[in-house]
Length: 375
Image 1: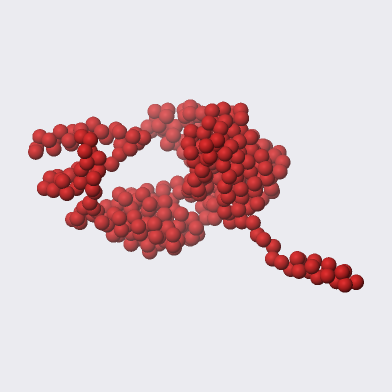
Image 2 (image 1 turned 90 degrees about the horizontal axis):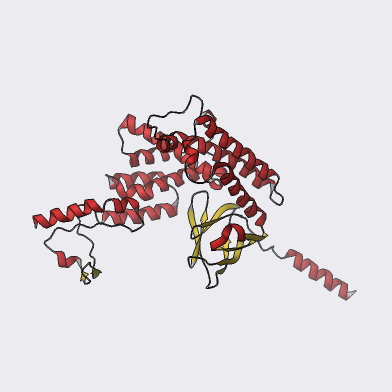
């Protein structure tokens, strides 16, 4: 009898222990012939970098991703992209040869059904639309049919894929529709450019489906990059109207319309996206920063914009230049700012991979020539 009481007591103690909540997913695997030592995990909705995943010498990796809710991600390794949907408790293994990814890709483990669905969905896009920009040359009716057929085939795939939840299917069905609407939304500008028709306009009613779109859905904003893009496009159009009516600069107009958004998550995202680059080219740094700080409520975003503001304020006109010391010069020696005292200093920052930067090099050479003549 004593033993029975001890067993019952043990069961009661165990049952009273708090359940350990898993708030992460595990991704592992091996990428043979990887071109980089790291792979980047990016959240699809806002294209933000979640983490850099280190690849071992043999291409193997193992990492954990902390999650609050299930989300769509993309793993970028060189030019290869692997789309994932991760939820807490998932344990996915990704394996492929980077040189032959199409024929060697294998995704297994808990949660892999979502990744395999997303892979097949991407294939449907290539089969229907193709690669490159030829689809944007198509005339309106043919273009519309292409994306209606794509939407139908992707929805059929979604509802006939086993192992994925009804909740995901509901979100993903809307995501597929947002992708369709997004392609309608960009047709005018894309067709105008690629078909070389600068005066092209879509027919009346072509964008009617966008009229009923709700731009305040936080769940869809956090899940779908397509919805995210439609929301951003909507407020950019509002900013452009404000530029016409109130003669505002684009950066100030975008802050103005974004600051009036009622949903805090969407408002903070659009304010931050408009500010992280806008603050670098605004004509009125003080006003821009003041407007952003008054409208934003996200603490981390405000801290990051404040860092940019302080750095930019230090180099505004009239301030003493920050010093640079011992920079390598084209003659093989080194140059410090103090070496150039009493001279005009022109600083051009560019990157070898930046097309617009390279395109400006002839202008840079003209500046150098003129400076040489004057001195």
